[in-house]
Image (cartoon, protein in one colour):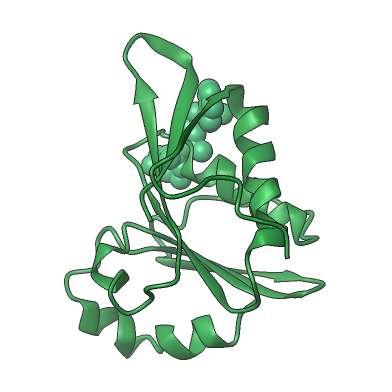
Length: 147
Ligand SMILES: Nc1ncnc2c1ncn2[C@@H]1O[C@H](COP(=O)(O)OP(=O)(O)OP(=O)(O)O)[C@@H](O)[C@H]1O
Ligand SMILES: [Mg+2]
């Protein structure tokens, strides 16, 4: 399996949505079956763009949109289901587990989880990426691997 593009603690600058998308796509071969990828990042930081690149690289060709209202989006890909979860408005971790999230993750090729801090301890092998705007640089984002 190819190495994950960033080591923990490393950052990379991404110039424009295309690079953001490409970075996401490059993660796909480095994430094993049933992998979880955690994303942190404020409004507009590029979470959906990165996720779209990643899920697109698994072979899903339709649109990938923010799961803000649905909480979980599930995309069929030729290599298995891809989940995109937004835990931002979830009040307790119990609420997530009540949705059978654990089984959903176990049965998926990949799960991208936004704002999933409360699951970090339960998925210790899952990389965490922080996406950030840079002051005064509208056409740039920074991605840092936290873990
Ligand atoms: N690296 C980048 N450089 C410049 N613009 C970018 C970059 N990545 C994404 N964008 C643009 O920033 C905007 C927000 O991106 P995106 O929707 O992916 O963010 P998000 O983190 O999912 O936001 P939200 O929290 O609202 O769901 C989009 O217009 C997107 O094209
Ligand atoms: Mg989004």
